[in-house]
Image (cartoon, rainbow, N blue to C red):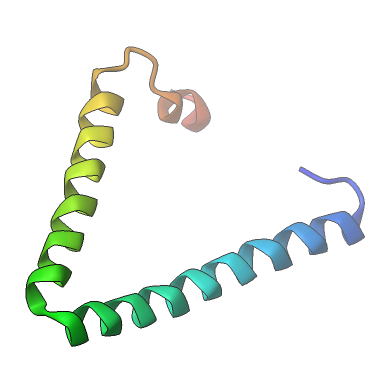
Length: 73
């Protein structure tokens, strides 16, 4: 996507850093919630799953699906 190798390297480094940071933050948040109470952890996970389910249902209802066009079907 990026013709210059330096620009591509910057974008890949940023992507990798975001993934590593997300994993670290998730572990710290899970520890904080579990120290507070398992009920807080449960509420947090349920709220994330509810949002994910809403996005999933919205995406399924959309008429245009980019995957077949990417695969050449």
